[in-house]
Every structure is written in C-alpha cells, then in structure tokens.
Image (tube, rainbow, N blue to C red; front, side, top):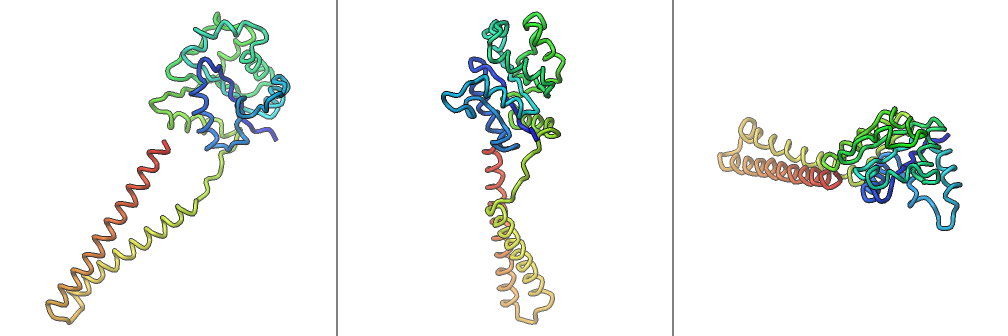
Length: 228
C-alpha cells in the first residue's frame, strides 16, 4: 500500500530549508517513507519516469513555498514543462493530499500568480514552518499527516534503558540513606558517636544520590535541546 511523502520544492527558493525539513521528517516516518528528488534519483534516470513512480507511491505531497517561490521563480510556473508545476499538477490530478507549506512567513500565492491548473492548490489547507519554532512546526505537520503515513514506533535504545537502571539504583541508594538516618535515631541502641556516624553515612548517600540524579537529568535535558 502506498504511504509515502513527496516533497516538492524550488531549489532557488528553499534548498537548504528543504534538507532540514527532510531530515526531520525522516525521524518521524523513516527514510523509505519520504521522497526528495536529490536523495532518491540515481544518476542517469529519466526524471519524468521517476516522478510518475514516486507520485504513484505517495499519498501526501508537501509543496514548499518560501519567500521567493513567486517573486523570483514564479514565472517558471507558467512554463508547461517546469518540473515544480508538473509535480503539483500531477499530484492534484491524482487527488493526493497536497499541502502547501509556507516557509518563514511566506504568503500563499494569489490566483493571478498561478496558471489555472494550479489554482486548486489554493483551496488546500496549508501548514506553516518557521525557523523560530522549527521543531514544533515539524511535529505538528508530521502529526497532521500521520493518518495517511504512519509514524515510526519509538524504540527504547540501550542507552535509555541503562539510564533508567541508573536512576533506579540512585533512588535505592537515597532510600537506604534515609532509612539509615531514621534507624540511627529511632531504633539503634548505639551510643551518640555511632548514631552520628550512621547519620553522616546516610546523609552522604542521600546527597550523593541527589547530585548524581541531578547531573543525569541535566545531561538528558541538554541532549533534548541539541536534538531540537
């Protein structure tokens, strides 16, 4: 069953942005589910044939529209053999879910700026992706098309499992420390020095565990920030 995402874009308008968006979508859906020409077409292949096959395999087409999609490259849309125009027209003819994706504050084109066979694009619900909230916008876009293209199942990596084991050990150590302090002053019949010694030992376990837990949590938060 077809379940791929086709990315249509104009290199002169949004090549760098498209690479970033492609990489993020791959995280959500997997490499095999996202088609972008430069990544998927081997040298020497007939682009028209590859395009037809890619659209046959796709259920969602993202039309990336940057600030210069019309002002610098829009005139090419009136050329019958322009590839971007063909991608959109063939997608609309197949009645695929075509999503205009406005990049960095770009506006949706006006009807007079598009040839008639692209006018249906203006009736499609749009999405926005901005550099200032890139991770959030991509997540919303991914979830918005996940009814047609299934999201990847998140797998718990070995590192994550070991992190959980580490946290459990820290928690156990802290509980033992608290129990040791409580035992020293409520149950133990030792002298004052013994009670102080057990209290210091227990407090050290609690403080050490708390420091280790805080450090581990900081590492996780920092890793999440870098991924965003």
